[in-house]
Image (cartoon, rainbow over all chains, first blue to last red):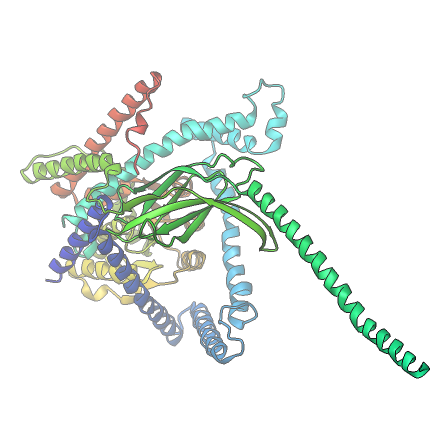
Length: 224
Length: 416
């Protein structure tokens, strides 16, 4: 039964979702909404599972004094500080005149969100620029024919995206400047490649979904 | 006598003093009345000039291919609808009887000639009028306004359809592909063998796991940042099942840091089962599959930290990834780990190709589980998928040929 029930649920939900795409009327549209809501509710409750798991593993690291236990202490501290400000200011805001939310500007929670969390997120995102540079350097080394073609295409696209590219090719006839070449590379060979990948993905999605709905693919349940 | 005369004069003066101001006011009032009367007549004349002509040919019809939740209205613009003309906007009015009271339903700006009423109940009759409106406003206050209403359109009833005809081509395509997949699965069940082309990334999975075993270091499996409702995550979980089984057989530690609680629960069950299947249930520890955070960049930072500190020998980045893909893959590359990535996010594929040793591109991600299992019925489904590709190839070639003759075949396949 441990396997049969999940497979039956998968079959019913998968079939209803597939039918709802083609049958717009009730009850299919209703089921589609309800299944979506149920997933949202389960996922919301499951957040506690994740949060408690994070706390448990971090606490165990501190208790066992593992080499990186300092990071585990930071996790617990950050978690507790955010929870404290969230609950404390949420409660305070309920009885204040006028009422306010813990997320409103001026609250400690909001300050932590704006000046700690957002700044850290932006920093991580900004690192991407350096990673793109190092990855491009490796990818564009002309080791073989494919890599050389990639390098040439990248040269035209990058130069065509900045004003200096057009400045260098002003002597070319209209429609043949660097930005035109870049646009052609992006909209013809690049789009063709992307579409081929998209078609493959769509077919893979159909095939995988069918295998899962029919219960042929069970490895996601474990042990197959 | 003089005293009487003085008294009479004083009385007259006092009387006149009382009388005169009253007369002046009264005269003003009369003048005012006559003035406002002439202004009002002028206003009426001006308003008449500014009143727009109503729109015409109002058509109200049930929206096709829906659950009976909308009625579409369309009309021909008022003759006064042009730049600086008398129409500022159209007001849509609705009633449940032709002669009943019409309530305002919404409005559109000048030049727009359609409106969707999505506040309808199935089976109820509705009547509509469209009013052309002209006005002058200062600080949201009307100085004046003038409107004229169209003829009544209706009754119209919203109905729910049993089939969305705009998606007939999708249905036919899916039926063809599904039919081919099921046909080949049956073929595989009856013992037919199929040729499946080699997929380098998947072939390398076993070597990658073996490398970690030889080096005595761990394997990291990152299943992306989407939840269990994404097919990519499901495909990733299927591959995790195979990879964790290989790792358990080699008695190599596999760590699965996740960003979704439901993925954690599923992945934990999968890895635990894999360890049990190969007879090493005691080797599995719960913290091998752990939750980090739902936040995209928080997750990337945590993964980077783990990679740098623990230096795994093998990293799998398989699932749905976004901007964090390159951050993780480059960090993995910097520690010298062998990396196998796989995603169906086209925008992230170039990053993985640049930073990882092997990349499962799109469909290969979905094929990986079947390919690794070598089960005939799963391999049969891959063959069915190839038939789908053949169909697309034929349609594309046909489309190119027809385009030469100015026949826009894509319009035939338009999905609504």
